[in-house]
Amino acid sequence: MALSPPSLLLFSLLSLLLLQSSAVIPRMLFLVPQQPLVLTYHKGALLKGNYTVNLLFYGSFTPVQRAVVVDFVRSLSAPATSVESWWGTTGLYGPGGPTRLSPGRVLLDQDCSLGKSLTDSDLLALASRPPHRGAITAVLTAPDVLVDGFCMSRCGFHDAGRAGRRGRVRYAYLWVGNPATQCPGNCAWPFAQPTFGPQTPPLVPPNGDVGIDGLVINLATLLAGTVTNPYGDGYFQGPPTLPMEAATACTGIFGGGAFPGFPGNLLVDPASGASYNAKGLAGRKYLLPAMWDPRTRQCKPSA
Ligand SMILES: *[C@@H]1O[C@H](CO)[C@@H](O)[C@H](O)[C@H]1NC(C)=O
Image 1 (cartoon, rainbow, N blue to C red):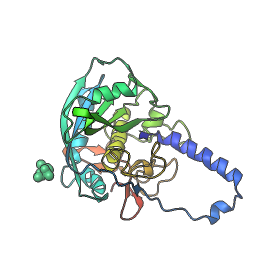
Image 2: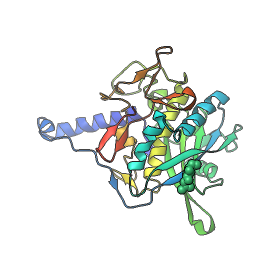
Image 3: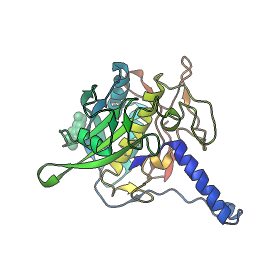
Image 4: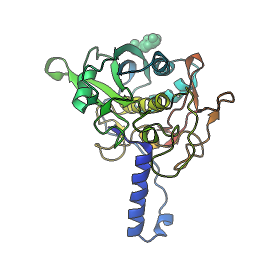
């Protein structure tokens, strides 16, 4: 369940549209009404109840950068914050009630124990450290760490591993890279000039850090996908190998009035000029992706 860079996705969607439109009578495009976006439930297990999020910082992250990420995860269950109400939409994906996420262990691997060029199996090895019960492990890689497919086809992914006797315990994990130097235009949009597609000036990131504010968008996207489609048979649309999930179904949408290349209308901090759409604990501001709302079947941006 890879998270494709929005601009790459847009680029491929555009080329798909161009290909398709050359194969059909153009006016058909106007006659066919837009299908409502529906994520189908595939009857598998969802993550419901209380989970902790273990954060493994792999490579170099400053204490300030780590605090931005940890405060985001803390905010997911902080009452009366708009981060928490954004997360609340995941609780509408039934069966079962809400999923409450809180920070678990914070692990540092500053010396990059598996080197600076990682494969998917390296990421699984990093995520396989216990505890797994009631936990999701997020592996976050530093800007100078190469990961197969990072920036080319994906900004991160989530998946499941197996542990315990005969692999009876399934656990969910995810990986997100800090795109600051490798591909801010792909994986930190709208805080960087997009690599493909319509060009818009970059927005000022709310924590003053293009890479980390972009990483938070992707972490938020993957956490929503993880709890609503943890084992590949939850909620998604499209092929299981390239599913559109809770937030990836709404790629590129951050506020009302969004269209390709325009993230939508956002709140702006008058002092810094930063754009955001959610507030968390400790006065933190974040930009979070719109999430598909099962009641309305629409992408709902954070208030
Ligand atoms: C989940 O955590 C909250 C807050 O710590 C607690 O009040 C609640 O009882 C927990 N729920 C379960 C099912 O353990």
